[in-house]
Amino acid sequence: MIKVEKLSYGFPQKELYKDVSFTIEDGQHCVLIGSNGTGKTTLVDILLNDDKYLYDGKVIRDVEGRYGYTSQFDRDEKEQDCTVFEFLAEDFVKLQSDMEEVCTQMETAEDMDALMERYQQILDESMSMDADNYEINIRKELKVAGLQNLETLSLAAISGGEYKLLQVIKQMLRKPTILVMDEPDVFLDFENLNGLRDLLNSYKGTILAITHNRYLLHHCFNKILHLEDCDIQEFDGTFIEYNFSLLAKKVELQEQVAKEQEEIERNEKIVEKLRANATRVTSASRGKALHARVSYLERLEARRIKAPFVNLRQPKILLPELANIPIEAKGSEEENTGVTVEAQLGSNKTILQVNDYTVAYEETLLENVSFELKAGEKVAIVGPNGTGKTTLLRDIYKKESKFIAIDEEAKIGFLSQIHGEMLNENNTIYEEMESVCKDGTPVFENRAQIAEYLKDYYFDVDMLKSKIEVLSGGEKNLLQLAKIAVSDADLLLLDEPTSHLDTYSQIALEKAIADYQGTVLMVSHDFYTIANCVDYVLFVEDKTVRKMRIRSFRKMIYENHFNKDYLELEQKKKELETRIENYLKNNDYASAKDVCEELEILVEKMIIK
Image: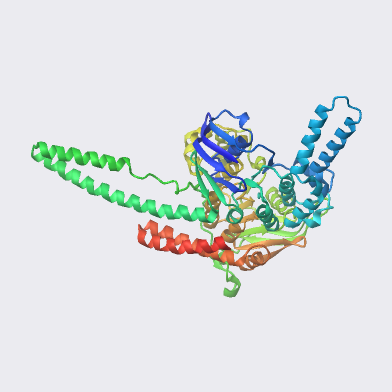
């Protein structure tokens, strides 16, 4: 369907692709993955609108037609005064109107050729979209997504997550040649995430999606395009199979590196011995032997395997370093079962107190919400889209609500899902970091320090003069985290911190949160982040919140949203991967290979499921 040959493209300050080639075939569900800022969204735009770009190489489309597209940011239509059904039916109603208009013009027109051509175009489009059955098709797709109860509701009355699903449905109903989606999962709650999964898996057409959501990656795609370091790796198969192949290749390559290093070291000793002999005794034959051995050593060095593609880049996120918090045990052993050590041990000092908090717009979202956070606790607020979670977090940050009390010594760091709230998008990256102060004093003395610091977040020095507005969503999140990390914040408020972050950055952030000694309150819909980072959950239901242990939260998610058996296999997979990494660190390649064989059997079970 689409074939790309030796595509090269970049900006003056950054090369994005160098001689990349790949294909997307009819009916494939393809996902484009890669680190933040590698140019995934730009690549998709080149595929759809190649005439806008000056690039080297070829973009070949075997079949022309309509291209469906959903953006990660598009929300403009949500303010329309219409029902959900009317919103989904718009394209079909317009086709009917256009047909009626052409027929009316035919009644009085003298030149029929142009009208007949237009009539045929509308007829062809109607047939390709199955317009005669659009009402049935709309209700069918709503049912697949679990949104059948929304049909008669006003578009303005539904949540942002539900609206994102409607955008996907609207494009699917048009039956495009290829459906392109740029992070359609951002901010979706668990219920809507499953709705998106079911929509993707039921769709018979061709899909090209950009997503970092690990749940969707594991369940929805049969082709992987991995963009990294200006190159693309193409893999026909599932994301789970792809990850296994990377790990197996890593074991193979690192063993080869180790063998080559042994050979290099052995030959270095021979060269040293020959040189020593050559200085004592002048001999043409010994000189030749030395020259030959040096040449061989140079060839070994030249073909030494560099850091392989499988060693993917992962930012080094370090949240603020704080003084040790005094600790004392809390709760009985039974109460602490299934809770992390960080939750069991912590100061009795209350950092945040919320009493009878209420928030309402046209209707009440949260009512009589009360909870408190102790120093060192890490907590996630979890619940459906549109229930006031972000509003609560923002009110805590602003310190303007009489229902919220914050320890006067607490220093707050805030990560917003609205990037412009915490970043001046007209600034360059340099200018933004120059504005970061601690106790009124700039954190960085010069731009060289800024450049050195941001290397850990994979901001190349060439990027630092770029305006923030041109960064990807993931890069803006990383920049917010970089600013927070050099503060002295001991209370972090994180609103969807993993949104837009690539998979490897998500894992880095989870580790940073786990290692952080301060207090964290986050809003998140990412099951993996919640399960890996927090001590307990504040679950939103019936317009208030209730405290849930992680064990209870997992059980609820298993029963209502996920496949329990699958997630248990996934946990076992993670354990095996950790064992392999540990064996590699100890250069125990035989054991790593043995565990790889065990992991391969497990991966096959996960694919069957």
